[in-house]
Image (tube, rainbow, N blue to C red):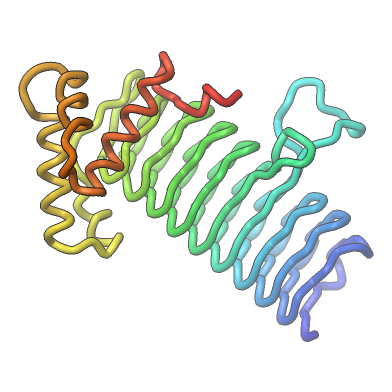
Length: 268
């Protein structure tokens, strides 16, 4: 094992470090944490207990990973859950990521994500892969962010919100209900779906035909005549619906099961 640990780092004896790990000055790593190979952990970083980190992640200075969630009444005896982080993630300065508030459960971050300066990921969130969350966006607890989502700067997200894959939220948005896949959303209380995220469709590697089908489905759902409910029902009955459009329709149907449009609230 080849590691480079600064002499000022404080690492619990139970921590497991993989090969080629760099640990910078004044880093603190708490008990039970497992860190895979090729990780770079810059200066003045704190990593909490029982965090599991995969390979080739880059943690920039002053981020705080896996310390206890922000809960009233929390003390040193309170048992909380864990945090797992996958591979090839970029986690910039001042990012905070909290473990689950429930013993035996997880906050989970996948692979190839970028969390920019000052991002907060609350307890019990699940982030998939290839996600970009821009500066100072704040993700409340229990949220689900699917593959390819891009949140612009200073987006505030209510707890229990789901973002469908390859959608985009514009800067300064306040998101308080679920967001279907492939769309652009902006505004706050309520935010509104504006258009299709064409750049996201390209990043997703979808074919021209798939992109055309998504655009046509979007127009039927959000730009057709009658109410949104009527258009949704008509699309739901279409047996020949494109699979990606079906995904959009199913996302809206799920969110409509909860009075505030956050279907994960049903599983509290």
